[in-house]
Image 1 (cartoon, rainbow, N blue to C red):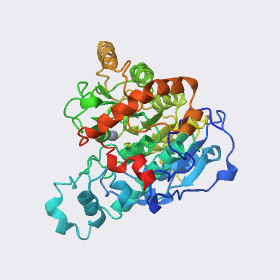
Image 2 (tube, protein in one colour; image 1 turned 180 degrees about the vertical axis):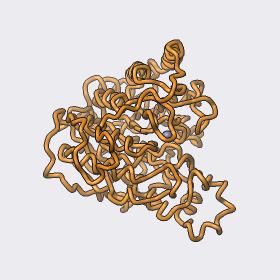
Image 3 (cartoon, rainbow, N blue to C red; image 1 turned 135 degrees about the horizontal axis):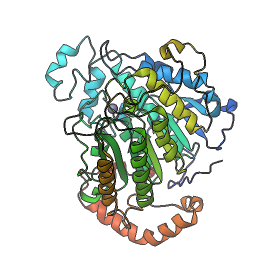
Image 4 (cartoon, rainbow, N blue to C red; image 1 turned 90 degrees about the vertical axis):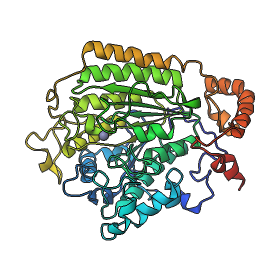
Length: 475
Ligand SMILES: [Zn+2]
């Protein structure tokens, strides 16, 4: 079925609810075109999550974030017949409890209760939760969050239970949300929730972010762990939102060197970006050896974005997706920013075609929303050269050297293999030889270290012992 290395560490890898006793965590996704799927060239099983309603929410007339872009994307995907190459799922909404695995209960209670009608009663806590202009209160705001977050969690579970090699949720990727506050159009951080799901099965998860903005919410959540490595490529000058993401942000505690930032200047072009992306990501993957990858595909890094200032073409953006896909690891692909919505739809439809390995025409197929794509009606409009490229060749070369320098500290990192989740017999059977040897060598030492680790202060750990897999299995 799968050519990817899917390693399971749970006692029952076929059930997505294995690690939870909550009845609401039972898998409720339903395949709406399971029997119709036509094999794609690579034989990868690609699971695609889309909720028809997600595109109907409105942040506000003048707000740049337009959920309608998700409807446009989905229509293009269907018009190109790409849905026939995937398993298409109607995602389940995340529950409050699931969302509170990361977010603070008081913050979620606020998101649940506040509406445009009653918001004046909550004005005192707006600054605490950072709700206002960028993150307005709008009709159905929390439902919107539950849809995109549930889709990301379902998409992650498809990977962990081995029923997909690649999972796609274009409505996810809201990387700025923090534990107790909204930020940058993001309220609930679905990426963190998705990575939590992956960590229940996989020892190491790599997060890669190609949005023009720094993936600060995800970096912060996993800053002090070595089980998740975050890598973000973004514009940085100390001022550009969110203001973080300098090269010296590298993680802390046992997570030191497991956060990596690639700060770029205005106007970066295809060649420089691809050169940096490939050389950095190849080195990261070889050093960190992730067991699964989460790729945030924010499309505001394209040229001509309403809020962005890069010069990337859709082909170059897609080349990053192709490069990561070709490592053949379980892959969760998410959306993110993107504010020139016709280009967002083009980009994510094109990237869907890459993920299912099916070439699509540059001439857009006729469909309900074709007028959005006038006057050229092409998949690959010219988006480059609008902004002067401030990244000199020297800057790119030096940046690459500095970033790769940080990675030297990862090589041979000994204790990262098995910190929390012990392998089980079934897991061993499904591993390849190299991983098995690695685990055997580490298991005795790993168990000892794990016990010591548990007795140490866990306050900064996202994966606390109360929610530990072993304990849940016993209950
Ligand atoms: Zn962004």
